[in-house]
Image (tube, rainbow, N blue to C red):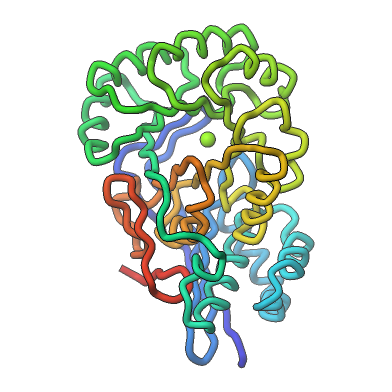
Length: 339
Ligand SMILES: [Mg+2]
């Protein structure tokens, strides 16, 4: 059956400006891929993150030059496909993720099964958090109102007014908080002071408190901290995990970092081996990317799959999110369609 591949950029706007310790955006360009055979249409998304790689235009240039190779990739042999993708797109994890997702979607659609069933995942998963980006303190009450349906909040810190942010949030709500510093605390002293202060604030875990690769410092912080420490910028690819033993309690798996569902599954397996708690997260992604990782959601202890609900104009419909509960559907593949 002959395949055809096409792509387009979709600009999505966020409900609020999305600001973290390194940058701020109010819209994102997402690269949507479509793969067709005679009967099926499969989807994939590249949401390249500026910390890790160039933007969608760079990926389009790569796709144009590699189109025929992509169409020859094996549909049913994910391992060798991933190996080929890593050679074809060594500089773009998002491109790898988009193409890997396309092929998994097609593979499942040809079997007429939801992908989560093929993965041996369960329908049921833990409640996802809802992210509160960095903002002026005056904007916090409105964000807490917007977050009303969500019982778990993930708070972005790593500013010089972190205490004020937490105080402003605690003035509005006593919900469970997860804190993501996005590498913002640069020294062990700063990290210890920040952690010590958060112990009293009902924080469930602390994500990437210090810059990636400062593993000796993070190991010291972990010994000191009663709050579990989760790697994000330090936990990019499957091969990173071994080096994180002793420094982190958990790892955050994201499709746009690891290169897709095939590697996400590998990271799940390695987490079991190295005894890491698994978190699954996302970039600001449409329902294509979020629905893709949700197919593995039941393997996670913590979920942060809120990218699509932070977007005001998501062009796709996929998994549901009701108060942070991610709802898979029984449609074949990712269960995604245009809105
Ligand atoms: Mg993070």
